[in-house]
Image (tube, rainbow, N blue to C red):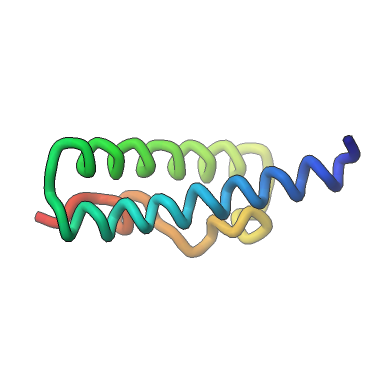
Length: 79
């Protein structure tokens, strides 16, 4: 597998995680229960880790399509 393939794979995985995280936020809004709340918290953590590690390694969040999501505001429960 080439570096280009790895990069494509990682970018695709990050995009899918972001999409599912935002979907989890919508599901949590419409049906508040422990499962949906826990799922949303897990996505918050995963997206945060992906962003922090990318920045720590000098990877632009735009390359991973993670530049337009802020876990601590976009992926928290509505109060």
